[in-house]
Length: 230
Image 1: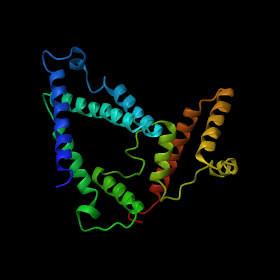
Image 2: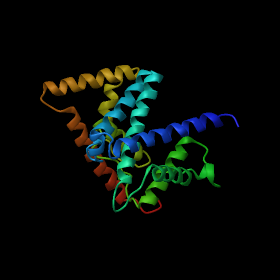
Image 3: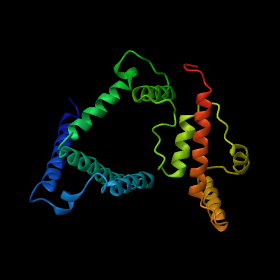
Image 4: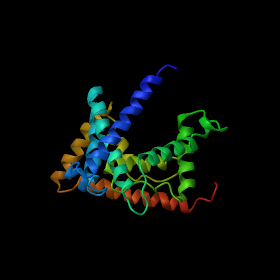
């Protein structure tokens, strides 16, 4: 079968990475690696995720491969730490088994009898299945409030797109964008807004985060007025 040898090599590479991490965390390994915890690794996990984004945006595929490796290391590192838990241990295979089961469960149009004609339909069903699995009552649940403000706002707007929720700043925003032709110009406008805010002593990140929190409240208010199943 085409690609089988490549897949086997990839799998062997993953197992070698796991073995290296086991050696680093075991007696006689690396003192720094041995003392790390889930909490102490948070800053590295966040940093590596942002470096992957940077590599994608730069278009440098070699750099992307390297940064994905660094991010994968974080996953293996956390799984190895979890494996050492004396009460409820789990390992990288449990992590993989979990995501495989989730992917199959949330793609009934691929692995089951359901159908999905568009990517929008797939996304809508994914969110619905996720909400059902986790017992969530609001589309705002599961969105980390610590996300960067722009990402947080984007997530809230995306999740609530099917709801009739007022967005107070939409009209003046459209006016401001009337002369904007592309994303580069949009970026320059956002930069200019940030600079103007700084000149007034305002924190643009904090301002948008506050607006996002208020919008989350509006979303939940609309949801509370919507009849179940409507």
